[in-house]
Length: 115
Length: 117
Image (cartoon, rainbow over all chains, first blue to last red; front, top):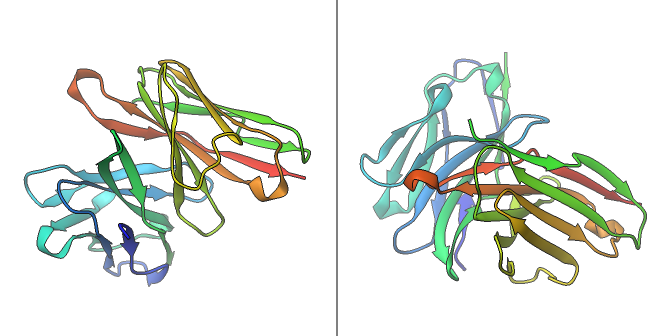
């Protein structure tokens, strides 16, 4: 079945550690890719998005993601995490289906950063 | 920046009653809005796509007679959970697409916690 897969459900890191969260999708054709973050008690916020062009996308708060078409992947990275990055991260794919553009989410990855 | 507002943020209702959740785009016109449901420790599940002035398109497995969606204006979509049951308790999130000026950005509301007792 077509899906968006996030490899890690829970990630625990110490401050200053590097972060990479995996995201793979199984939709063919043209897709738009997104990473969203949900801080505790807050709504979803867009971290970054890829539509076309440079496959290395830079987002807010020092996050970046690389689109690798051959691997159907869009992994999220940050060189040095902070305690304030503790949140849940969702990868999403926008796919045109049934006459509409639909945003399909992965299961999410809970990141806990310890001081 | 663009804002999407949901109301109420939390609601408790009795089993068997209906409850309405509103989703408003505050400073842009949203021809398309989406309703999601987020189960505990799970991802967001797309329930339906709502287009202004037409019937909503429901995802497979979502009961359209139970989850009534109305997109009566370019800034308002409502989700009504009819004859609510405890298993309908969940976090419901809407998003709205800002397509003005050739853009295609989706903004999310804060979500609404529904507890059915």
